[in-house]
Image 1 (cartoon, rainbow, N blue to C red):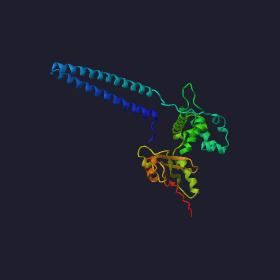
Image 2: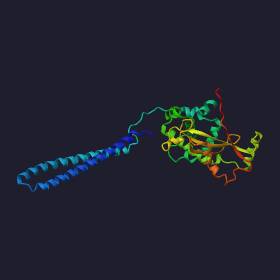
Image 3: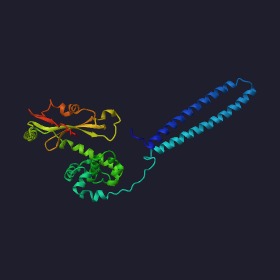
Image 4: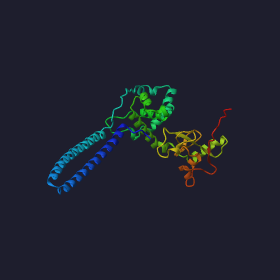
Length: 319
């Protein structure tokens, strides 16, 4: 479970204190009513005793009045503190880090191919291909007087985060490398994911009859006549245990993950994918729950004799 911030924790404690003060106030009011009842009963006593009781009652009422005032002041102070806390985004400001984006803007695009691939997690040609694909997306163009960072910057930051896990994916490492704040890194990543998802339909599509025939022709030469794609499942590791039904995401490799099913052609181009099933699910279960499987009878996805070939795992003997 994610750790609560100090601001949230103190806010909850304030709520509890205010509730306790209100309960104390109600208890004090109840005590005052009891004293009034005693005053009525004491009027039937002798005059001397009545005078003494009246004097004692007056002193008790003065004490209760002071108690009511103190209680109301305490509640007012707590309410004022809560108001200040709710209108403050940070309870305590974190340390300010010195950041520089000089590397990103002046050196990143001119890196040698090997170094560029290490940071962008892909070749330079693939990077520019994706950049052209998403550059015109509305997420990168707002009407704010303060312009966004260049699209290639946001893409580079997102790809770097996609390509790392555990300690390598920590925000501090990325902040020092790219010279941007934690919040900017999250915003850049979200924008890139939204832009990529919007382009998914035009870039990932099941081949038509002519396309399947071309794929089948290629695999026929390799000894698999009628094959129009290669299908396999892969596990995408999650950074932490999901909050809901977390145990179902625990896979055979002792990681929390998602099972992703992918079909590609002879050029490793993705034709279809299905994601979202927990890592503990078998590949066949994921395939049978995919949209492709459900459309087998209603859509002409295969011609007669066509099929997808499942990739068998290769095991290497250590002996």
